[in-house]
Image (cartoon, rainbow, N blue to C red; front, side, top):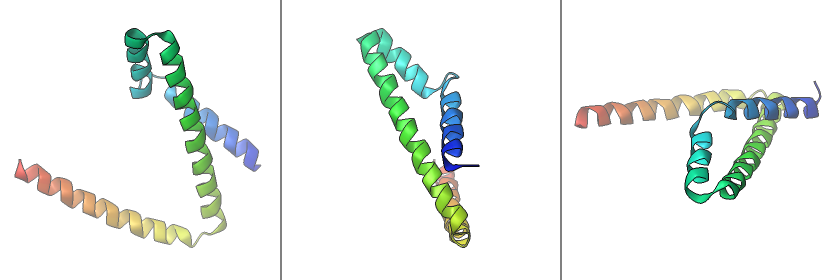
Amino acid sequence: MSLILVFFLGLISAFVGLIPPSMLNMTAVKISTTKGHQKAEVYAVGASISVFFQATIALLITKLLKENQYLLIYVKEVAAVIFILLSLYFFRKGFSE
């Protein structure tokens, strides 16, 4: 698949993920009811731009990992260490309360 097709598939997937009720949608409703419709539209445009950049960064990282398979080993090792640290943190926090 071409890079542009993958980009648009990712962008569409991210957009579809924002359609159901979520924190972004509920925040837009809250802004609309408290500050007006125009402010909610500005918020929605800002959220859309944010999703666009997130999808672009995800695509670039995916391309980097696809071209450099050896990096996946390091990513997995770092992820394992982070998850172990998070597990220990929340385990201790659960017993301290």
